[in-house]
Length: 205
Image 1 (cartoon, rainbow, N blue to C red):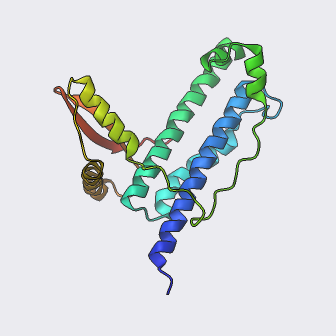
Image 2: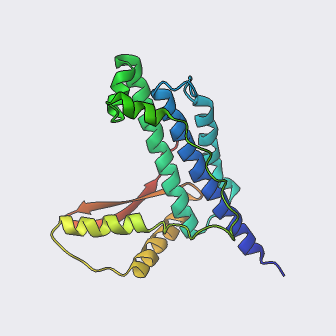
């Protein structure tokens, strides 16, 4: 008998991988546009709006486990951060010209620009769940930032990763009862000389 819960979990994992790929591909298109590539003559506004809608509908379409919710929140945060950067570069190009944008992108050498403008080869389609490599631990970045925060306040701590994960999941479950299906954004802050993990509802454009 097929485990329906496993099928649903695999479906969400594939959808998350495809969402991550779509964000990366859209970033490539924006960069090609800003670099003046003939392969991307116009800003990919339509694709950006479509992906924005897809991200807003994602937690409605899928039932996310805590770890999947964490992964989705990171992807939503990445997309929103990239979108703010694209808008900033677009305004910079309109006011100061393309060279100012290239400088902001760190491209100063014509040969570097030519290499950067080479269209990337086709990227592999997201494999099926049985073929996929183990996904990156969605708590790893937060864990490393938390340890680094302790170092910044002059403390060298040893924190068990599994215990850290359990604490974050407990916090996420408590917040989920308050915010429903909206994506959460976890971050590390230092208050009163002590590192803390906090969460907020990720902004959506």
